[in-house]
Length: 596
Ligand code: OXD
Ligand code: MN
Image 1: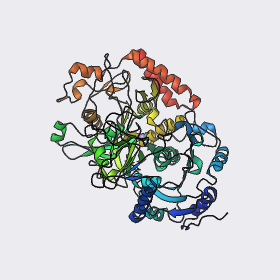
Image 2: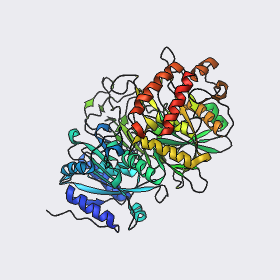
Image 3: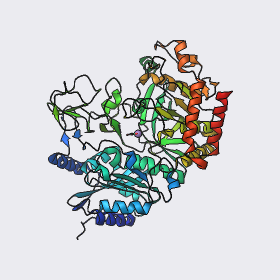
Image 4: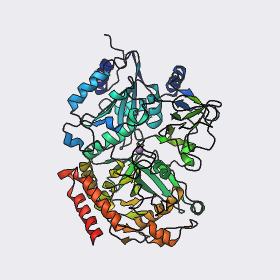
């Protein structure tokens, strides 16, 4: 068989790898993505001509496109996601594992001839600003134009990346083949020791935009451990005070906790009038490094776009996210308004389109249709530079200094509105014990506690116990420069089941206490679980929350916490002896405090 021709680059490692992948996948042709607008425009036109994309209304949504994936391919598939380290222990009890050579054999059978009759696109991309000391390079091979166009929004792609890679640079090898989109043979596989990612039989963003969760979290968390930095599932925001000083916060939340809303928060009006502002650096991932010059922790957002959940996004709930989607955006699995070629999803407004195509591709009357018009996990892929509150530091290759790290979860009764960890070790414990209660939005029982350490449960590329150890190591290196660590809970409920805190923009009031703590301007008192604000330290101007209600939001019910400790003990048991001693010690302290 003749192998498809491809133009070699000046990096022999790249050429050798390309030769092997082309020989295996057997594409009909091979195309380098140079990142030029003319090339991208030709690909958009081709995808429109085949029906892969629909061009949306150029006046209302300039540069925007619509796409649907197949019905069985609409979300990340954690049960088909593997970390293939040489030993099972290295992957740890939370990850799926298979011995690497066994997995390579299995995948080889799936990829052999998978691109017959198709074009393979070679996408060189940079996670982080091109040439930043934080940044890392990947090359994704894919047979999907949709992937090329999404990667163009989510990462920095093209020839300039190859220029930085040079003749000898290393890169993460990413191979994606759409194949038959067969869920039975779908695999999202990581080989951390080989810097390699292989994804097959999916065309859904989270499984195929390999720069995001696969590289920027799973592979990068492993690289971070080797190289002394951190890849975290965190938003990064800058909070500007009326004096014009900006302090940066990195925050990790499990899904369905309002992470995107927090990243793009709009302050309550009275704070806006005083001159407070929020700037978005990132909405999902942070890469954090110690700056050798000042010893402080700095963060970049390695991504260039937002891959956001559409349903629930509206002018009211997240104006900035919605604005970000108004141009050069790709919409996936939302509903289409056939009359004017615009998009719609549940929660956008109260006017579903009458002449509608739903996410399944069925023509329906949206005004009377009973099911979801948009899939609950339908998405927009929007350039970050569209965001009205994008930070001026978004492209800063040196990143931004982090003053505070915030962990959060959805807890009806346990966690108070906010508390501060006593020190870094305690903060790592607070992150390691992060949890959320399931909501009606997800399948399964409601109100079940799901542990999600640092919101990294689906994204850690090695043994979670060693990951806790890496956090502790970073704290030792940071010493007095370590950012303060906090925990927030916007979802506390009263005995009648009502939310006690308004959330959204009013979360700014909690962020202000956090930053006042960092700058030594606010008091806190120690409790069984950590340092709590005095109710009067949280600004409730215009909120209509009484002092008693705020006290209740900040209260710690020891009996509920004792139950949580039992759950934590069970959870930690799976890590056996690998659980770091400092984490065990923190659990003992909490246990003792609750029983004193
Ligand atoms: C995401 C996720 O899509 O965390 O960002 O699942
Ligand atoms: Mn995420």
